[in-house]
Image 1 (cartoon, helix red, strand yellow):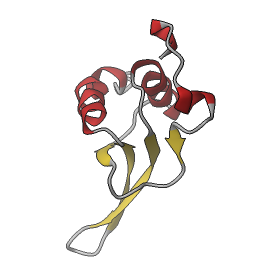
Image 2: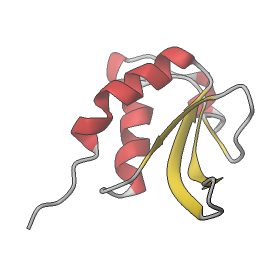
Image 3: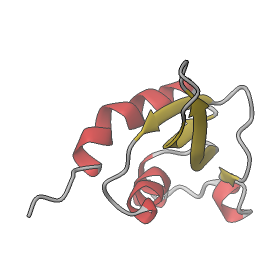
Image 4: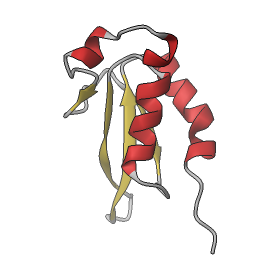
Length: 95
């Protein structure tokens, strides 16, 4: 985390964000009100492990499909930290 003057080897080699969702990652599902960059910037600035950001598709018992955003972390502690801060960075715009 550069805000503490520490270089993260995963970030240097571009390995922090993964393109697929590994089964051992801890998922956080939510609806978005702000751009993706808001979430990824916060993750890069405040957390240090690997993460996934993308769509999560599910089917309800009635057969309807739905899609929500999914952020998943290799470390369960980072998933908890993100879940706790989610309400402050994902605020709906009120007009």
